[in-house]
Image (cartoon, rainbow, N blue to C red):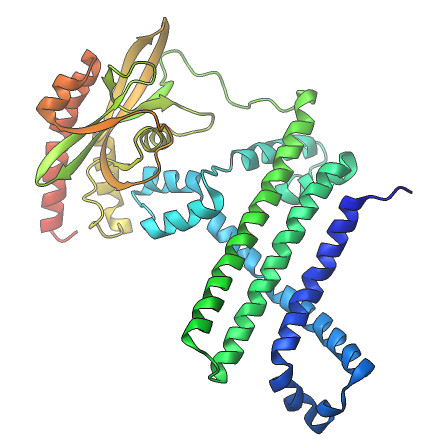
Length: 410
């Protein structure tokens, strides 16, 4: 049997994930906790006996810390539920935008993650297990690991190495929390010490979530790559009907210094042309989600569909759902046909209100906010000019409805 350094590294990392955090916890608490638990016998532990006790307690506390740390996976899964794809869906369907500090925190860990690899891995798993009837008996991540264990050990080793790193920082985070509680109860805090431990806590949590995200994504990427040559996973989507939208976008407005302004962006292939933000509808994507996503990608603007009076609008109740649907229906500006480089495009447009700023992905493209008259003059094509005028009419009507609704106390 040949020596495999990668597996040795993973084994050592798993071992030290238990022992090192446990040793740190034992060392920091031994002066206080030792006499409390052992009484006078604590002073008798010297030499080999002291080392044996230290290692045993370190291993025991390490395992207990590891057990407590496993609950952090639940927190991770909850946060991952608000990655970019979920934020787009929330805004497109429920007019909800996460606070900017939450969006920044999620971006620091997951960047532009949209769970596309997860969705593809789920489809691969379902098709592979369809005949066995066991598709619901195992989640996508565990199935992908089992698949790699059978078919590609080197890829699994890379995943395990990332998992080992994440587990170490998960346990380290728990140790820091326990030490903070112990020191706080004993009033041993100093301001610099508190700041230092708080910083370590945040960095440990960040590193744990980052490494766990890498391990999960690496698992999905490996399985997708390994199954690609089989050509067994095909799109279940039907071919779009002729005339149905291929793209979606928005007529986006904002209220700025008591003036209504509209958003235009440079055309992708011609900076001398100014157009409305729009883009291709991806597989299994709702038109509204496409509009929200494309506006953010092309301009960095988070925009909700309709006139939502954001961000001062409180959460809608069930009784208000009918009103919300009417507003969103009125914000649907219909389809427009374009011919671009000889290709026919059908674009579904929505009236949208800017509700926040995000990260622009199309860095090379400028965008401008202009009053209606100037926006119509700047817009290059006739369709965009017409949509801007229609959008202003709809905005005026919807704004009146929002104002009337607010006066009724809805």
